[in-house]
Length: 345
Image (tube, rainbow, N blue to C red; front, side, top):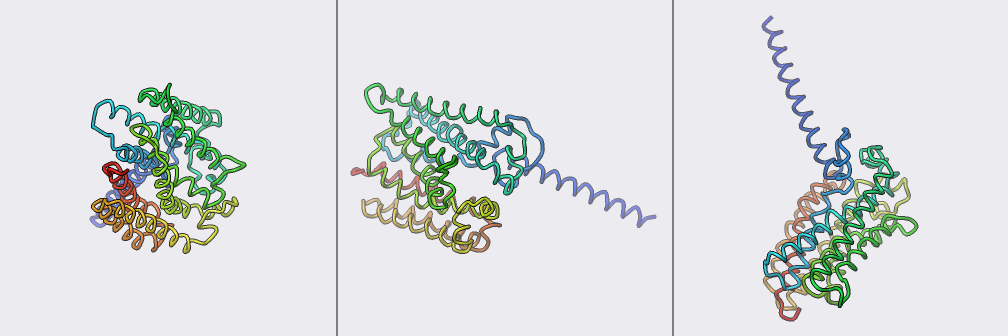
């Protein structure tokens, strides 16, 4: 009897532990669902959460920080309240509006491949209708462009000059469209698609911030365009998890074209070489401290490459991005800050 009672107590504790673990997994899956991450929950949720999931908030921070980079590079940031208001609007355009637009239209045209790779996504799972998806695409598109035009008016670009913030936003929406939509669909080719993605994450938000608070010069366009090559490596990491579906659907991602082993070394090379070149340029223009700061930020990225990416790029893709991407992004901020304080730039 005592043994039976002991077994019942242990079973009770085990059941509670199992239920707690299940709840924890459910909570984690629900959070992943809300921010648009891989491994999301498949539970039914309100429409507003589905719409937010389509916008993938997890992808917004680099774009938001990119606006900060452009602001810093302008050399005109004075911590004034009106500047904060302008910057917050620019961040909202770059993140929720136009990144949300990009992710939503991409999910629509990826619905067949997502049915293989990520069947829990809102569209292949049937949680949102075609009409609702296109409503979201149009609202995000027109809201982002309208706010961009409003910023041009607010800083005096209009009516006497070109609406540079609006033009940057318009370029971003055009690139997002040809990235996902046939017949061009740049993402069908690993190099074209990943460079378009990297350019959108590094160059466009920087241009938005710089055009808003300063002048978008050819030098900045060239620098950010080169820096965007490093972001190809970041984009490749997102392709490892989709190798099976990409191969079935005829998408020539870099892991599909060259194999996973070659692709992981390409990732390391692209990220590392570009940042070393930028550091050398910072030394050249006399910004030694900033160059050293950039090199210091490269060290944890190299460690993450060795311990996570090179060991198992498929299993460790999310961990690697979490461990490496912030340092890559802070490196861009360091570079932008160096430009902002340099008297010749």
